[in-house]
Length: 221
Image (cartoon, rainbow, N blue to C red; front, side, top):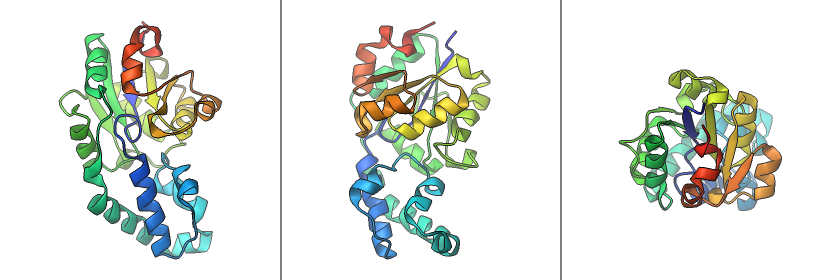
């Protein structure tokens, strides 16, 4: 029996992917690291520990990695964090899940203070059963740590949960954790890429998933 739905947050429940990409690109430009917006955006969904090695040479990463990450974090919080907006009918989707007798957890690469802003933006801060943030994982997605931490907090087995996320990195992490994955296109990643990474089904956004709740993995018992 399905007991819980575990949501990714950025790009899944709140519209933030483009701003994360802008913050990273501005950060890399500040440190003289050549990138393109498109290349950076394709990596959003990973935490800093997995994203930076894609663009930062190893020696510089060892020498300045913490400084780069701190600069990016401060820039994002100062310039972009409060632009976060919840996707349409996100609250209604979470309410539907709860009414169905299932629990709801969040599993995000965001830091805890960012996650608090996102819950308010999505109007779900009074609905979430439990949550895990970057502080709860040794390695971020596509490693399974964050989803395994959510399972531990929920006290359930992988087959008793479903993950909802918007990136191939969510899907890879869910597969490694043994949890079925539902994809949404609201983060801007291609359906083919989500399915190739392990998504069992793909919907447009939270509103579309709610409209097809009964036929989705979320509606199964």
